[in-house]
Image (cartoon, rainbow, N blue to C red; front, side, top):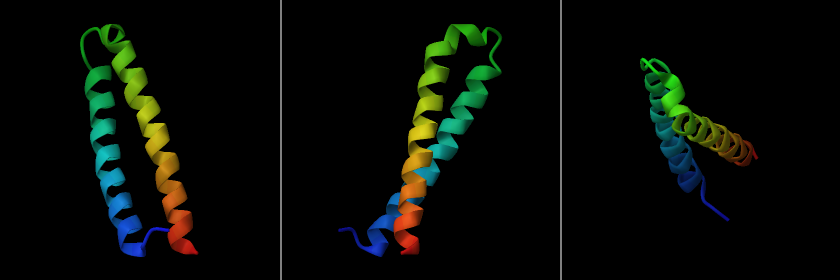
Length: 64
């Protein structure tokens, strides 16, 4: 099992990564030809979803 400190740090790191990924999506979608970056945008959005799920699971564990 993980300690509360380890979970809190993991959540902090995930929050940071989510922030950066959201900025990446915003930047790529605002490019002149966003269709050229479709695969990168899709990948970033899938990572956002995965990290969001991980964050929710960590929050549940911390609330126990």
